[in-house]
Structures are given as C-alpha cells and as structure tokens.
Image (cartoon, rainbow, N blue to C red; front, side, top):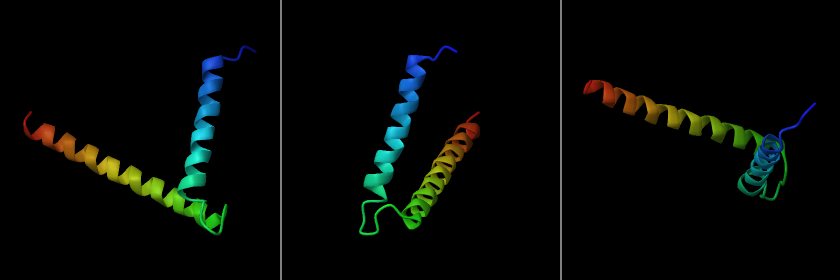
Length: 67
C-alpha cells in the first residue's frame, strides 16, 4: 500500500492544529483537559458554523435579489 507523503503531512498537521487550538483556546484553564473544556470547544465550533452559514445565506440572498 502506497502512502502519499503530502496526505500524511496534511493529516499530522491537521491533528496538531486541532490539539494546539484545543489546548490554548479551551483547555488551558485551571481545570486543564476536562470534559467541560471539550464541550465548550464543540459548542463554540457549532455556533461558529451557524454564524458562517448565516453569513453565507445572507450573501446568497443578496446576490439573488439582483439576479
């Protein structure tokens, strides 16, 4: 089985980026790595996705007004 080195580097880089953001963004408090920090990260991610979807729908609607 051949492994693509760019795919492997992307996978390792993505995992490292997620762990770094989790550590410094949510898990660096006095509780450390806990389920409360993980739940906060998940909720923040969902809310951020909803905000981005709302912005996308707004621009789609704006563009369709002038179609």
